[in-house]
Image 1 (spheres, rainbow, N blue to C red):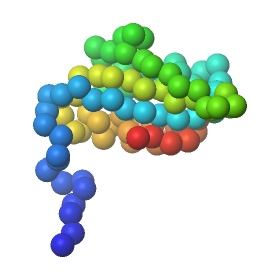
Image 2: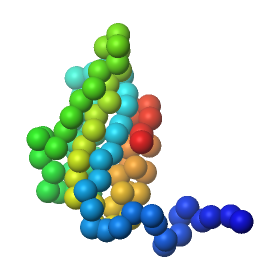
Image 3: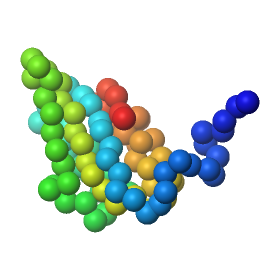
Image 4: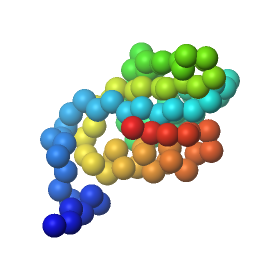
Length: 92
């Protein structure tokens, strides 16, 4: 049996609080880049919605943003744009 991950069904119940994670190399622009992309789809977020974790050697950083998601298309839009950005190495 095959599951269509891009269909209309989702295991997430909307609306809900959703936490995204994007990882990349430490830079002067990375945090603002992730915030700006996410804010386009979730305009109510603030800088207080961000939490950060550095890698052990502080070469990489993960940016976590908690936002109120209203639909799966909102989440797909954020992740699609993050995936295309050259500074983003991985998303969860």
